Length: 144
Image (tube, rainbow, N blue to C red; front, side, top):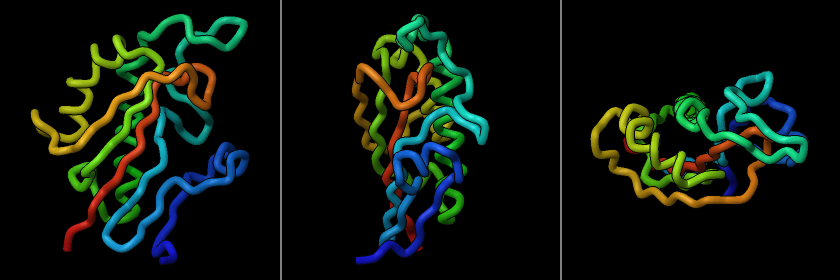
């Protein structure tokens, strides 16, 4: 089945990696890993050392909030909201700093104390952008 709708941000890394940000097939919207960025690049980058390794994780909350905001903006292109999300996969560089902020950030993003979203969180040694701490992919189901 061909995609019914695809969307992108028009940012350089889409061309470099060759992908789209979201694809709708039927009533399902698959959103690629979103992160804390604007049209200029990473928002609230974490400090990195001379090898590009993150040295401090204090920006996790701000990056996570911006990531959910970006996801909400992308979903809106499909007439969807975070309320339509049924599954998310969260990739973080540091599990402890993620858990310290995730509950508060997720409650605010989803607008409820108990988001009805299946969620998986994984720690990874590296993400795409230097200073990036979190990336989240989403699956949303559209309803009539």
